[in-house]
Image (tube, rainbow over all chains, first blue to last red; front, top):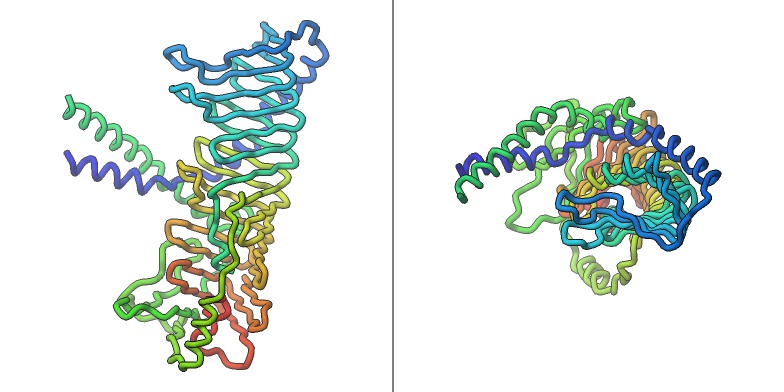
Amino acid sequence: MRLAIAAALALASCTAFAFDSVAWNAKCADDTEIVRLKAEFEKCLATTNSAADDIELPIEQYEDGRIKSRLKAKKAQIFLGSGVVWGEGITVEQYDEKGVVTASLQADSCVVDRKKLTGWAPGLATATAGEVTVSGRGIYFSFKEEFVKITADAQIKVKSVHVDFGRLL
Amino acid sequence: MTFVKNIAAAAALTAFAAVAAGKQAEISALVDELDAAPQKAAVSAPAVAEKPVVQAAAPAPADEKPVVQAPAPAPADEKPVMQAAAPAPTEEKPVIQAAPAEEQPAEKEKKAAKKAKPKKELTGRDAKITSETMAYDRKEGVLFFDRKVYVDDEQYQMHADRVYVFLSGTNDVKRLVALGNVALTNEFRSATCDKAVYVKAQSKVVLYAPENGVATLKDSSEKGGTITGSKITFWLDSEQVEVNQSDITVPGGAFKANDAKKLLGK
């Protein structure tokens, strides 16, 4: 029994560094969803007529009903047919099962697709997860994939991410 | 109940391992490809050294086993090459190992004085990385920076065309791969190469040369000197460096024991 666990752990640790670079690069390069969300954003801008002030909206929920991610906006409109939410002064937060914020995103404006659990912020935006803070212009994010892509002026600030190149030099 | 849980856990782990192991061959080939390829995934890695491999070893503690250099590994191979009682090098890839020289008392004093100098204090400020585009995959623990990548760390600066950073669960860097026109600099020294790989678990940095060029490690301080090669491997903990297809230039003429070490500022 212990041997089986040990063997399983050993195998699991051996495979811990597996990374499918080809598939990952393909995923990174695929802008289909970004193009779609850009179009949705423009459509929302053109058709917004009843935006509400200071709203909070759950995006995702855990199986037991607790909120997994929530959108807060100074101004927002929900488009019921498409499931898209357009907003300004946006904060999107993700929570763990204890309700603690694990990641957040601030954007001047953005569109969130509540069905596909994806979003697009065309302007300046900042995303934070743990000690990693990324910022830039044109941010695409996927709640489901836990994936963020910045399309221009990307910048990241990281604590405790020190590569020992300093010692080489 | 606990036993059942154990079985379930073991089964889950085994299943995961089996699935992962099944995919391992496919995936590890891709990882090797990423590691080996200086330009995008399809470009071949630098050729295996034909020139001698030079290894400069730091003075070893008395109880440390002698370091023996194994024949040069394939460029994509990330396994450590340091092996005790390794087979003798082949004729095509002779090995030169620089043994520590006997130190004169004056030299020892100089070193002691140098050691006593206060090191530049680090403030522990955040490292900042900028690029044109970036992707962060939290599930995979991968950060990818594309085009005009600039890393501003307290201890060094780096430029590269593309950089992959692989993070652990606690967001520590476990591996970094910089690709294309890689330039690393600090106050006195610089390194240029086509690909740089840092592996934290092995405490190792490997610099790969471009297809028709060399990787260079240069010291622009008074002591000067340059190391070039098709592949420069530096073990940060043991402070050993291995250079494939090497060319070492040091001031004052011939290459001496410890010169590579001095060149590296150790």
